[in-house]
Length: 206
Image (tube, rainbow, N blue to C red):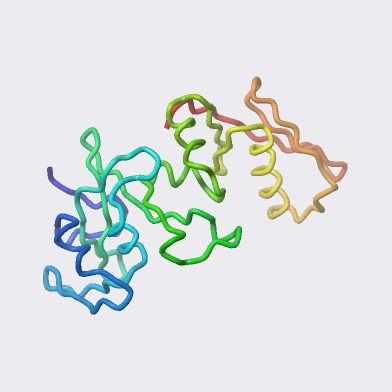
């Protein structure tokens, strides 16, 4: 398979298997030269992959490491799996998000593919729940334009509520969020001005 940089401005410097990279990683590991470039090997992300190459939710396994050079940044490895002719990036995920008190410790880390990590978002979601979403037991909703995901009216309302507070600086009790998944809309009702409306998109499977 011919590999192409998946992000604008990135350049692929080399391709290796995980076993050619991860054994040299660790909290005190020295820099190592790959393809004539010195690479920092202490990344907590590498240490997470070293523990487990598989997505803790869907089980796909990282099989290739690309040494990539983002514009203006030092080169580093990203882990990918090949699925249906495409590269899917593997990510380091905080089991308990930092926003909810989670720490940057290896025991709070797990490997997730980018699709499940995006779906999990800023929540301490149980893997069982993520698998239910993955298998179509639950419907996932995204609020168009906000690029956030939820599986309930309450979750959708919370996404919109946070966005509106940040955008308009409204007091939390000065408006009401009404979710109608049947009509695929979310309305923000306030005495301050005209109602603000958002569109919901249902995703049956991710």
